[in-house]
Length: 286
Length: 341
Image (cartoon, rainbow over all chains, first blue to last red; front, side):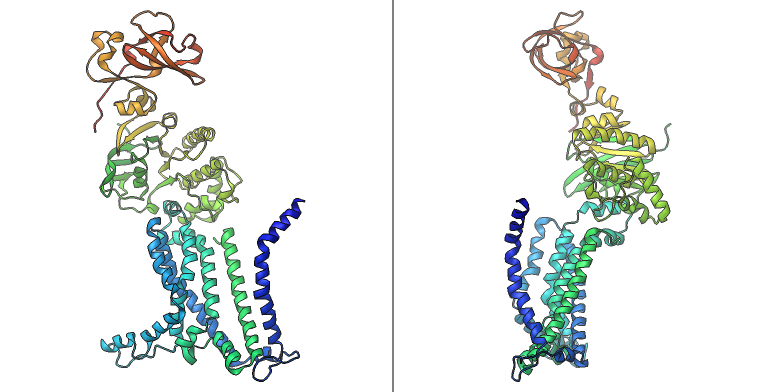
């Protein structure tokens, strides 16, 4: 009886979410996998039959270079976001509670601005006649305007700017839970500030770091607006390739195969982060 | 001459903004002493401990350990350790890793570390719990780990910030005895901050009573209890009858009277339900309260409301409204100085 009631409770609480995932994630993903294994129909769509041709076409130097660049740019953007967000999160967490709200708002509110607007703002800053180049040439630091826009660097800058809050908030939440007395206790026991960070603060913030890195890596890896606007041809990422295959080339099976590849990379990243977070939880990272 | 002091405070003061938490403390502490700093909350006792530990910098004065000034020394390089009020055990480390932390920071070899951590855990009566996480321990056990984690470093002085306040009463008394035993065992100077006068009197070799940022009296528990210098100390430590000296004439005769105020401890007043020899004054019991070992009587006599403690076994006839006789010996009267400020 009790077991049965518990089972019903689990079904009632987890059921809707599971159903949602089934209908809006697993089923569409199944369709994508089927498309990836089907022959292309001219002008879009898929034809009948089964083929590994599209998956085979992924092993193509051009595509692999774009996948490689996507992973690299996402990784660089993630590490850069981490490097920027961690000290800021630490500084905010160490403030008195009533003083924490304002800096948190300053970080979160800009993320409500539309992604396109943020990216166009970067275009006006980075372009040939933009803010940076005008300043540099005006001050005589460079004679020629620098090629800033339509580079991988521009893409990374745009991605870091857009996804900073996704890194900062989980790290802040983890750091905020660390008792100030623990830091004093470590100092008291002979730890220099550097070792306090390595042995006490960092291990206890790992769950937040893993969460933040997962968010930013997954979101930047699949991004296509920012590489399109700020990267041009040289900043093309896997998202642009998928968009290109589906909407321009109209080779749906290849677009689907690329999507499957992207999902595999993302799942691997989340799995890695989960392992890291669990290890941090168990406290065996010393 | 006594030994040169181990720890010396010279006119130590600390102000936070315009608020002076510690207002000039001068005192010397000897090796192997158990000293309790006793005061109400907000008297500056925790700030004083944090000054010694190095988490605050004095705005005036000097702190010297073994003859060397500590003021410019960061906390990690001071040969003192602090047991935090809520223990501050590292939640992501095992009990053993917590205890070994200080040794690891001082780069003690792993084998040596393990041996000393075992000894420290055995000292606090917690052997074989090293692989557990602090969250799996009870409050009393965490307390023991916190003490072990500090003592394993063999500091010159161990600072304890209200170490027992988070424990319930029975456990607190047990841990008091434990702390005393551990201190005797290791011979390290303990500086223990508390607001509990019973704890201070029963544990300490010396008690420093702190009020408004100053030490108002420092002495053995017996001196503090029996010879408080001021009304403030008298009233903070134990129950007390503070009586203007002139009002004691019925008991002491005109020669004993004078100016100022005096203290008579409730258990030093003799009380009987029958007339007594000598200068006994008649009074009426207004209220009694039974505490098990003792009975407290509130007695009106000679225009005074006196608190009298009697052993329960000798309290026959001391009921509400009873007529009683009271005697106060001259030796029971302590003349108090006026409090400054």
